[in-house]
Length: 307
Image (cartoon, rainbow, N blue to C red):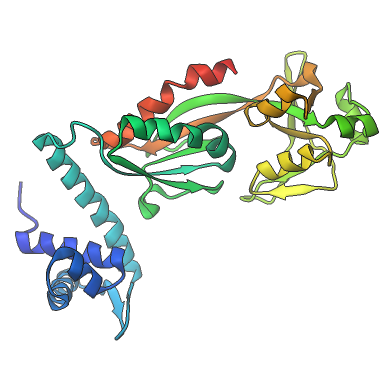
């Protein structure tokens, strides 16, 4: 294999990544144990080799250019893989370690994944966990995430997809609301009820309610005076305060259903579900911390399917 880099160039790439992450040549120099002038010279050599500016410099700060951002994302991943490969060969990775970055939907994060993370870290104390809670689709490469969980994930040949569960949908309301508005017994009754809406942030479209009618799927667009966007838990909170009916995932309201503060209605029609999928990038080398977290979550699939 032809050599593309010498030791000096690899060192310059490391200093470039440090400067990108710390936001200054001085801070990068302190981390690396060299002078700020050495960092500046190294990055200048990189820019000359690439024929492109990586930073816009002022007397007080540096800012990555667009080519610099692209170069950083690729270099960061490459350096991480080199370090992890070296550690694995040397035996330092007999236990998973390092930073695990995961992106979770608010619903699944709060009710499924976050409660399990202390157990995961008890098994793997050398792994630190960075958590993004939100419902937008993240860019694994540009944003540096290791894993994501999404509902209704779109097919993507660059990602490995593992189904975690088909989450059952239910329609719920408080006893107070039902005593005032009546209990719906058929789907046609929904037109006379306050149905709390949820709007998809990606499209601005209100989602339909899904039902099973004698083994056939039925989709209904309901109406209501309340509409939440981005966070489904807002609709659950409204339902908990007698604002109306709401269709949500059963795992979110299990406690309220058990203690009677919410009542499930339209039970003969509540047979539908939506899939939650674990996603992570394809690659010959998957860090041990990622493999460990995937295996850890998959062992809970049977429990989730039973609930």
